[in-house]
Every structure is written in C-alpha cells, then in structure tokens.
Length: 142
Image 1: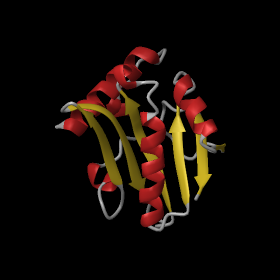
Image 2: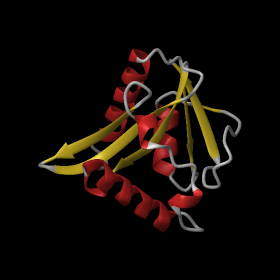
Image 3: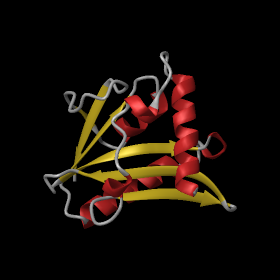
Image 4: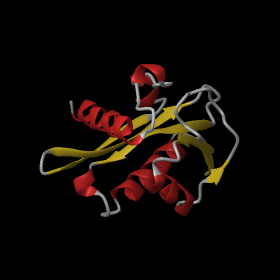
C-alpha cells in the first residue's frame, strides 16, 4: 500500500508537470516483479507512518545493468536530501546484485531531478527506449 501510494502521487505530479499530461498506460511501466529481489528492488521512505518517497531498481535481462525507475519525494520532504539518500541506496543494491551499469530516463520538465542526477555523476547518453515521455537519458558506471 505504501508503494502504491507513492506511485499514485508520482503519476499525479507527472500529469501536472508535463505539458501534455501523463498517462501511465502509455508509459513503459515496469512490471512489479522486475523491481523485486533478485531482479531489482523498490524502496519506500516513510516518516511518521506516512510514505514520503520511493525509488525503484529494475533489473535488465543482461544481468549486468539495471534501470532506476520511479524516483519521487513528497513535496513536504523535499530539500532534506532524501532523493540523494535513496539514489545512494539504489546504487548499493545494484552493486550487491552484481550490476556494473545503471540507466535512467527522465523528462526535462523535472528540472530538480535532472540537476540531482548530474550532481551524482550520471552521464547523458543516447535514447535507450521508446517510452513517449522521457527526453533525457543517463547512465552511471558502478
């Protein structure tokens, strides 16, 4: 329930922030099993029994790479370094799974996320999927 709450909030924010809105059914939405051990992980941050953030790691079939998915922090928790801590934890989980390369996609309307990824050492790369919403693509070697 906490993960679903975070995802619902995340999708609602995307719908408000994207010029053309957001419809999850048009997105390359990962299967839940792809973000559960041993293939991946899905983190939920909780404060005072309220879910305030999430981040997923979706394992890729090659076994050496994974995608970071659905990074979101509640507006009330922004500015506290939570997204950075979740990204650090995602990297730790990826290393523990033997992943050597992480990928992520995002939309330039999410300026704070783009700035965070760049600060954390992510490098811009060419498009790697056909999802209609992202316009920026990054990788990080572990």
